[in-house]
Length: 218
Image 1: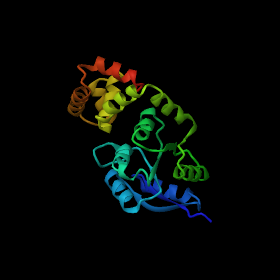
Image 2: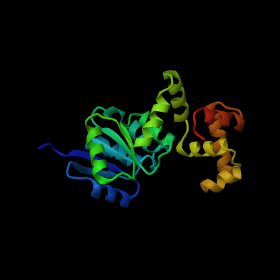
Image 3: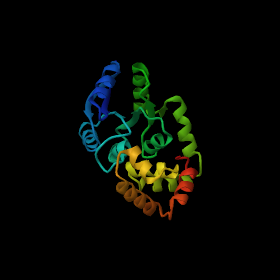
Image 4: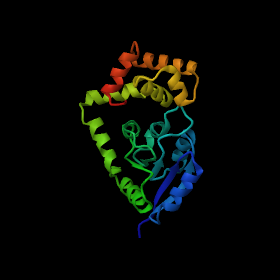
């Protein structure tokens, strides 16, 4: 009989981790848990699990969330594979973890047996996606290699919070509206916008809107 696949659960909500643990069947063995970026990177290096079930929005680190965890474990990608498990089905979230090396992305609407199947498939080297999410990956990587590389490099310059601010500003929100939406001060919004424009080498919000629209981030 085959040994169960070893899995590390990474999510900042203890109840979610408990629910996922309970839903996995006997083909999967949970060897550890982590609740933030730094803890996840540390646990992967200590435990060497076959698969990491990874939420894409995590506290800690430099604000890069799940993608930052994968980047912090690039030396182990031939040993450990990453499967994103998130409530989010946003294209940006899907592409952000896939481009740094995750092998799949499923939403938390998945049931236990199907999630266990997904873990085994990823452990075996397959790429696994919830049905409609695969299209995001095909869209993102169906362009020329040069286009993808440029987009990846530019997005990687922004923190998770800067991406949130960027998207709202590009949609036409005022600084005050962005502040209200994200529960931060107007001054903080101004600081993030300045950082975004500087990192992307753009001059104003009109250029930012065109930049975001070209990458389907609105």
